[in-house]
Amino acid sequence: MRIWIPFKKKPPIVSVIRFSGTIAADGRFGSSAISDQSTKKIIEKAFAQKNISAVAIAINSPGGSPVQSSLIAARIRRLADERKIPVYAFIEDVAASGGYWLATAADHIYADFSSIVGSIGVIYSGFGFQDLIKSYGIERRIHTAGQDKSFLDPFRPENPEDIDKLLNLQKEIHEAFVQQVKKSRGKKLQSEDIFTGEFWIGKSAKALGLIDDIGHLVPIMKSKFGEKTQFSLQEKKRGFLSRFGIQIANETLGEIENHINWSRFGL
Image 1 (cartoon, rainbow, N blue to C red):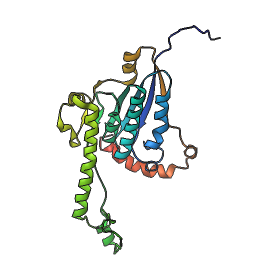
Image 2 (image 1 turned 60 degrees about the horizontal axis):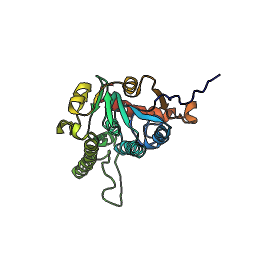
Image 3 (image 1 turned 120 degrees about the horizontal axis):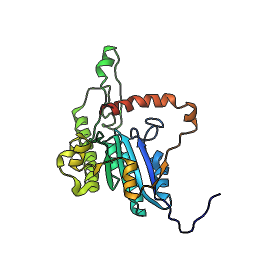
């Protein structure tokens, strides 16, 4: 039988959100992708809990879509400001590129000694198949209404004008990323050289102002809110069909590109 004790102080509660995987729009990497839509409910649920002391976000991501990264980070920041709830980010193996963008939604960022942090840049990768199809006697035929509709066609030689346009697009996205980091980290940043796309490990990231300190989620939260702090993990539920393996083919294809993203950081 539970005995009710009036005026007994409840233990502090920290809502925990995990972001693990490549950041991409829904359907890109199957159910493993981190997207605004797939995380919307768990983010809102984390902030909607009663009497919470903070929201902690655990990040393990090599990056991905800048748009999805921006949408997710903006949602976290908006809810944090509206409800006056502090947010702490904890980087696990890696928070690079879009993964670091997610971390900048927090008021404070922590990482492990060996965590990979940074990669504040924009990358485009693709393949050129024009010589391959030529060797098989295949002729590429394409007709467009609008001269730019065949932009970066992988079955035709690279067009210098296309490359110039791509670089201009990347420059704009990169600038948005830089402004996000500066807005989040402010005077904590120690160098302008962090915006080159390079990445760093724990202590070096701290020296540059990319993170606040070395530390892990549970001990840091208990040191701030007390040893009796309780943790409420918000997780994305698996789709009904994916429980029976119906999405296996789609996710297997996505895992190929997913593996490439992780391998850039030796993981």
